[in-house]
Length: 147
Image 1 (cartoon, rainbow, N blue to C red):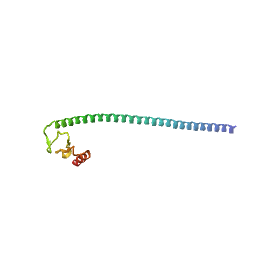
Image 2 (cartoon, rainbow, N blue to C red):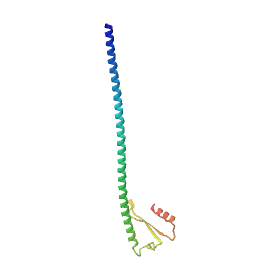
Image 3 (cartoon, rainbow, N blue to C red):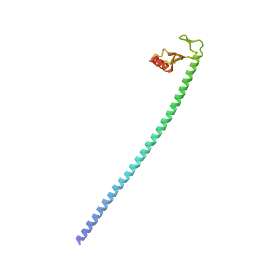
Image 4 (cartoon, one colour):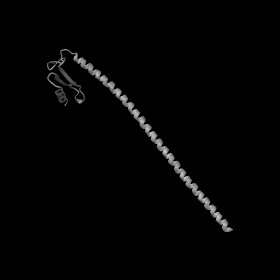
């Protein structure tokens, strides 16, 4: 009888211990699964945020680029209009001779380069008689003056 009671006690203790280990194993597995779900959700949220921020930054960059292009266009137009007005003003000057030739002649061309930098005190000019020079010679002459 004592042996039977002792064996039943040991069996109950073994059962409780086995039950405790099963519950512990289930708890560890559930925790691991829950953490992996949270980790995958966090990773997905991070990827979504990264892509959203990238797209937002790209759109902001494109908008800034468009604004810059508009400002550049307006400035270039303003400078071109000033240059055209200066050219018209220079062309309207009658009787002005360069090198003994009238610059209002249709066969004579004066190309000038705006002064810039440290050597801004003198204007570079190339005087060309269009009857005597082709386009390649004109470009070569201008390039030689720029150096």
